[in-house]
Length: 352
Ligand code: ASP
Image (cartoon, rainbow, N blue to C red; front, side, top):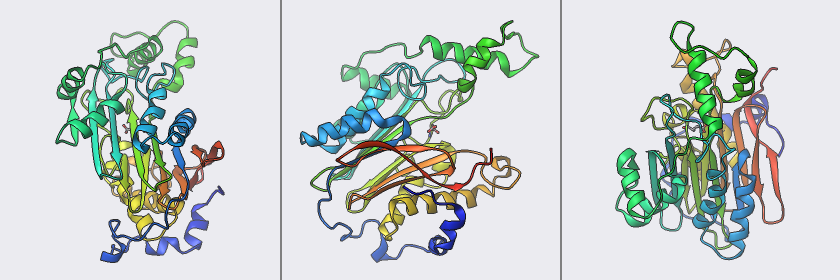
């Protein structure tokens, strides 16, 4: 997938229609986007290469695309070395891991989600049960935990030693005026540096050979967040959206910016207008960059968003793409033949 610079993006004229409102015939719910089954595809964030492999294996066996993507991301949720998702995820500011996840099933246009769920390794599976066994779309906190326990999930401590030590270092480096002293050796702090503050999530979307779409987004959210903070991942339309007539989109990165712009819904809406998945991701990022101008504290010196946000998209025709706010990231694609990491397009080039 070729990299698309902002300049190229604007030159192609795609930027021109960015602000136009949807007409009825362009509605993401309009029929007629499909040209029939396009072959199986699975698309995920860059940390999802094992998920795309697993989901494709299951699609080939005839599994529902939602079950396929959930089985894929479960591998990542259960991996203690992945510090942004499930077991091993970085905790909130009190050292407690709180997980968010959503699922959406295209053929039934239904969804389920959990937020601020503690002690359960696989929130995506709980989100699927919310969809299948309740009349609700989202359960949070204690209610989500009670629901999971009622369905036989086992409570476990999700805080691994690595995540606990990173959290401790984070606390110790917050201020030199409190009673938490940093360790004598700086070595530990530098080893844990990548974990001192971070985002991270897995989003995975799929198309089966009948033209059915589904998706999942699952995360431990923003590291060291305020307890109870809910990001975009469990919010349908922000961290995930699926319209079985059009396509699917998922997201990772700064959840607050995504919630404020209904990002994944917007990507699908742009695809419904005829934009390719990559164009739809870029146009959504452009909108987010524009609305972020109203929040100066989130801008860099050049007036651009000082955060990362990524979108992954797949349409009913089997076309896929991804874009991020800043250059330098990849996404995972299984196109039915090969499972690869590809370069994401981007809105702004990172100057190193
Ligand atoms: N979007 C997630 C959140 O804001 C975090 C991430 O994807 O990095 O909770």
